[in-house]
Length: 465
Ligand code: ATP
Ligand code: MN
Image (cartoon, rainbow, N blue to C red; front, side):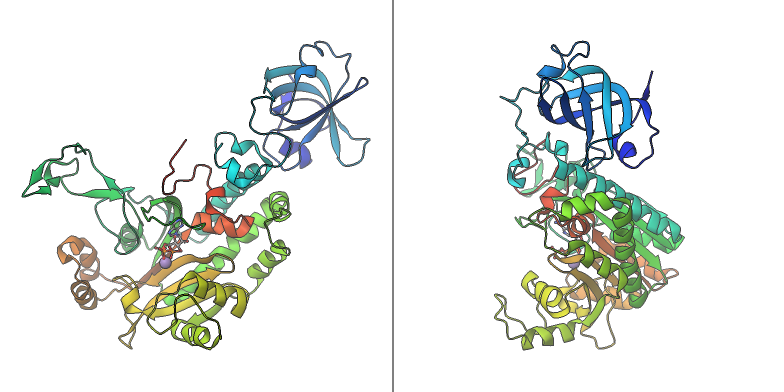
């Protein structure tokens, strides 16, 4: 049997010329009396491979002549250097196997380009398109780059629970997990009796692994998680999913400064690696009509320069002096809205910005209080076009300060007994952040909607396939 190869390996010159076997899906088929040309893709590379078929080939009439866009085929033959222009190699078919037909009357994907909106309705066929194929390959390479980045720096990968009974306060609305009969749950005094539920207490899908990540960093120093995260926020935006993947490093003995440096190195490191391992994919995606010119140059520039750092207080001053009339008025104490973030990144700095030291009242209880008593050591990394891709902080490691904060915010201190004990026994300064994987993918691929960088997106009103 001939060697079965991928088109990616062929394009990357990793396959010796000669007798080979290939399989994939037909992009286009041009037939004439003298010769038949098929552009074949197997989804492993941006460019397909041109198959050249002689009509005298055995079984041509029953097989080859029926082949149209979308059909799956398996061929063996000779890989040669193409005498024609426009491609390096071509494949001279010696034996042809029509594996699965695709009736053009019924097959939803045709040669013409389809809108991204339409493709979201046919998610089961979407990976066959050039755009989704490129996005999925970038997604895979980026995930690998994430692991490499942390593994090379002595971080341990760990999995925090997906089903959780601890609320990472303020992170977002939660999906409940229960085996009680939703039609008729047991009740005491009118309230649902969770003592009869599977976990004997209310449980939900995790909105963040941070608190559990802190537990492990307090034992093995530097950890990162990379896992599914769920938020039942009813926000129909181009940047929010109900199910997304988050990367959350947590480091003992790191302070805010170290955290910021790591966040920058991380974003730059992953972008650099993807630009090199997926250069063809990124070039192809950057050439799409919805991507701004200069996309790749911008990404390269982001990898080379330090991210601008802004104190929240200075960011507010900049926004107040901008002369812009924002929908949400600006004053010290507000949470930055996306229009504010966009002004800072797209107009003021024209690049990524790390905003630090936010007012304590708009941030979570676990962030370390600054000496001014008004701000906390929070940091958000904002990027052009998207706004926030990273949210993080130095954590409050002082037992008394943390307890006072939990009480002042009206949280249930009993529920956080274990989190408080981390500070009671051998506490250390520590810090970490969360990066939304799909936001980083949007940034790298230039895709405008987060639903187009996740193979099976979940959002309000949609969990199909
Ligand atoms: P935003 O203000 O953009 O809604 P957030 O402040 O609620 O985000 P964090 O709780 O700080 O988000 O989560 C850390 C990171 O996770 C964010 O910086 C973002 O990259 C990502 N993220 C948060 N919510 C979502 C979501 N619904 N879909 C995709 N990614 C998200
Ligand atoms: Mn945030």
